[in-house]
Amino acid sequence: MVTFQAYVIAVFSTIISLTLSQAPTYRRFEYKHSFRAPNLSQRDGSIPFWMVTGDAIASSEQLRLAPSMRSRKGIAWNKRPFVESENFEIEFEFKVTGQGRIGADGLALWYTAQQGTLGEVFGSNDYWTGLGVLFDSFDNDGQKNNPYLNKFLLGVKEILV
Image 1 (cartoon, rainbow, N blue to C red):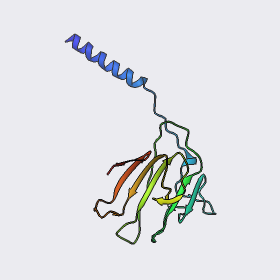
Image 2 (tube, helix red, strand yellow):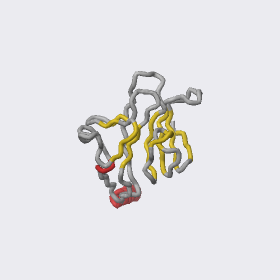
Image 3 (cartoon, rainbow, N blue to C red):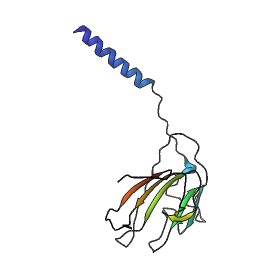
Image 4 (cartoon, rainbow, N blue to C red):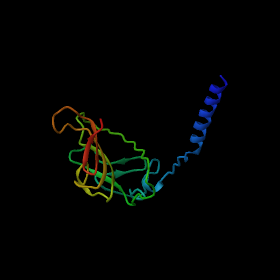
């Protein structure tokens, strides 16, 4: 019985020492890569460190990428490259509203090597190097499989939901 207790104590001591020896996780808020209400936009409608173009409208409380009208699109791209860390976490919150029940094409979160331009792929350009997380709400192909979430990493598509 004494040997079993010694074994259990040794195992727990090893687990605790390994746990304590692991490097702690650090979190840092990157304010130049973020925006949130209140006081989201400046008086001129711009958002600090961001380029907002197309039909996008920034106010003190929200960024509206496109109004509830047909064939509208807008984008918001950060003006600064994100090179601070090899590992990072993104918190992204959005709300989709409107009068219609069918939905529009959707929206995307991009993490790319180059800043995008206004285009046809969820408001941005057709080709990119990086990651695109696409929230698709319109049933373009008639398969009744929308809404769904796609992830494109360096041109490879993976359906997530």
